[in-house]
Amino acid sequence: MQKLKNKFLLILFVWMLAFAACIMPMGASAARCGDDVYLGGMPAGFTLGIGGVQVVGICEVLSENGVVNPAKDAGLSVGDVIVSLGGIKVSSAAEIDGVLASYDGGTTELAIERGTEKIKKEILPVKDMASGKYKLGVFIRDSISGIGTVTFIRKDGRFASLGHAVAASDGSYLPVEGGDIYRCSIVNVVKGERGKAGELKGLFINDKVIAKADKNCAVGIYGKMGEADEWRLESIGTSEDAQPGKASIFTTVDGVTPAQYSVSIIKVDKDNKQNKNFVIKITDKALLQATGGIVQGMSGSPIVQNGKLIGAVTHVFINDPTRGYGTSVANMIDQ
Image (cartoon, rainbow, N blue to C red; front, top):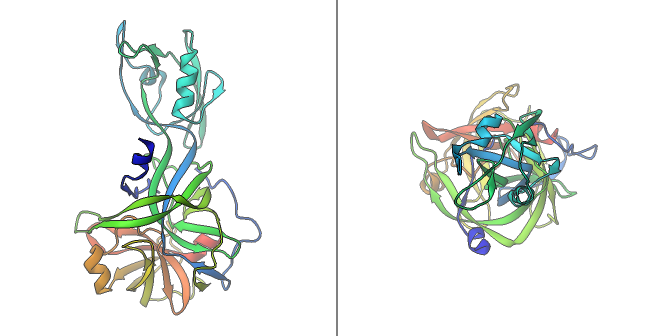
């Protein structure tokens, strides 16, 4: 069953995406403007641990005393991350089941993270009549998966991707405690239309773990990749290099190999506080025919102008899928 699940089409969240503070600085060896990096554009499948068990829904439990809702009574909310139950650290749904299997009644302590807050609650698990097991009354997940695009890879193998964060439902960044990045093949495209975002659909190639993720912040997912000598080098530009006019993006809309497509930079705002430094318009006829413009899954696609990497695609305009935002590479290399 797990193998079948791994072969399902996985679609990029609008991840959610946009995951609390960056958790692992890149250090003194980070790339700087003028350095050369390996250009991205290839799709990647992300499976990321979130350092606990996230509440994605709250439900009632039918007990011998009627319908009750332990999670609601304890003050839990969707988006909370459960980090311990009964004083025992938990990082998966199976570990929560294990703690509840030895539960012997009474209220028990629940430690959660809500955004940047660390909160302790008292919860009273109840026995579900159907299964005979104790329940908290929550729907949970212990990892997140999706598809995105790699922006660049440093010569030491450090990579940057997505161009924006993966976020919880309340907009806070999800913490990342390790994760596997898989090679991914794009197998279908849902074209973007006015009022409806399109999306790339792809398959994880699960025997090809190409990187380990360790950081989620405002401008993307970062981690360590293996050998990167198969990709082309590109010089990192500065915020002064970007200007309105012709440019290119590198992205993958079929298979595993990036292609170069023409775009036009309509507007440059290097000081934008939301990292929306460019407005770009897709002008390439082949890309417009294939996707209708910018679609989910293209986040992180590198933008190159005059032979320099200047940024990454981040968002699409819902009312005009041929246009969208990009973030400056200066934001990404400073992480």
